[in-house]
Image (cartoon, rainbow, N blue to C red):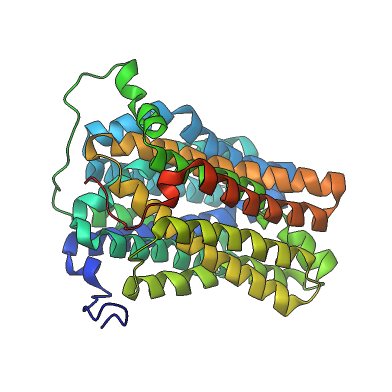
Length: 413
């Protein structure tokens, strides 16, 4: 297609011209889709078994903690060993864990302790998978195609988060055995696709492993203010603005929508995000990237406030879709800057820290929303969070002028 701004030809599918990226994208989509199925199935089974909402919180916690506890190891492994190899092995491990859940279901041994142990194994695999997967993309496409690859990579996750939970619910409705079987097959296919990628070139650190090299990711982030600003912006904006944990309250008590309406509310941010992700593949951000990112974080907060005060279902759904769209643009800019401004030899360790920040913002954000809702009410908690995201955007734009002044999505690759 032709860019109206520059007249230059834009290849919307540039990243897919590289066979390695095409296999990578299919693998990421299949694995994300499978994990959505597992998440829905485990949640239903655990709650049916114990009727204790606290156990639902543990489902997420046991999968997040390994990323936090292993942050120094996972990033170093991604930089020192082949990222393709790590991805293939960890996806194979996730397939094995899904097969364990299938076995526990078939044999009627599905009990909280065994399930939490299996989910911990999922968490360990994901802790190693995350930095390797995020760092591998830049090794599969040339620098000029990387922004396009980021858009398509984000779209894989967004499509999976929209369709996956629905598919998981339908499959679970047939049988939990069917749900876990499909998830196991998809994860195994994901591993096969990754191993089908030819071994890419990767810069590996020459120094021997030590505490100093393990901490290199933290040191680089602290030194490089563009990267520090981008990572911390996501942490605090989502920590304050996240309202996902309170969607059941809105669906049941405020909007009176019921379970189907809750599904619509959960899907709305992903729908907005996927449309923007597809649009960005043909309309990449060419200038003033930093300003665009800060404006979109502020819009994220504004639409969060709109959702918080709305009592009309269509307004609430539209606000969540616009919230997801704004977040997608900020994620696109942030992830592109993060990968391209980070040298390849330390990229895995930086991404490991980033994954912990992202996980912490989501997990702690849900806790923040629930705690504040209990203290001051649901609507004030959401409105406060949206206002907090706007304040974070303003403060970070002032505190990180290098990030604000970043114009082009280019870096020292």
